[in-house]
Amino acid sequence: MTTPNPTQTSAAILAKSSSSATRDTFLARVRAAQPESRPLPAVPDFPAAVPDADARLAKFRTALELMGGRCVEVEPHTSAADLRQQIQALHGADLPLCSASPEVAGDRPLSAATPPASLHDVQIAVVRARYGVAETGSVWFSEAEYQVNAIGYLAQHLVVLLDPAAILPGIQDIYRCADFATARYAVLVTGPSATADIEGILIRGAQGVRSLTVLLRPLPALA
Image 1: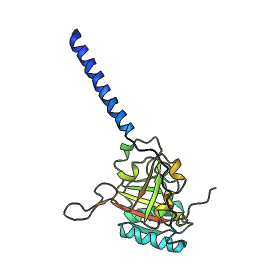
Image 2 (image 1 turned 120 degrees about the vertical axis):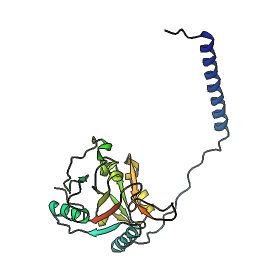
Image 3 (image 1 turned 45 degrees about the horizontal axis):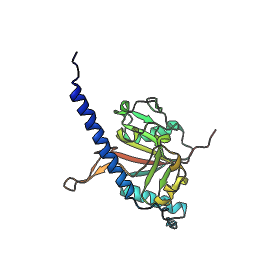
Image 4 (image 1 turned 135 degrees about the horizontal axis):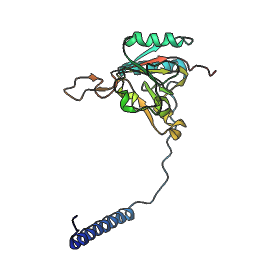
């Protein structure tokens, strides 16, 4: 057993104390130099450019396709089995499917307790978005929709169920929703992952999902 050198121990304590004092002095000066607090400015309410529901849907579809996504309409009364078949027809019946929505049966159970790393081999992920944004073609998720946040990034293909009635006109409208105040995690997803910063060549799926498909389907009525 090595006996600590009292001189070295005292020097270390002194150095740590001096470092803390320097830090506290620096922070005190920063706080003293802060300007007086003042209320945040009021953000004006910009009128919706697409107040009509049909116009919102058309703009959403155009914006989504511009960002590399696709939009598919689904019959409101499509059964769960038929809905799964439609999804598999888009990407392949042999690809593993994981679903965060009770509307589509997945090949494996998914819950908030699922380890994120276990989703590394998911090919198709199905999630219902709470909102869409006509202005940008984006869809909004929170931890409640994803169940495991990683599913939105580890899957190869993201299939999004969206109620056309949940499409809001613009980004300002989505930020005003009360959901932002209650969600622990919130994200706006616009099309599949893409990058073009290397020689200006567009590559999809470089940092996330390779494809994003929005299935327009009204939210099922609660039983």
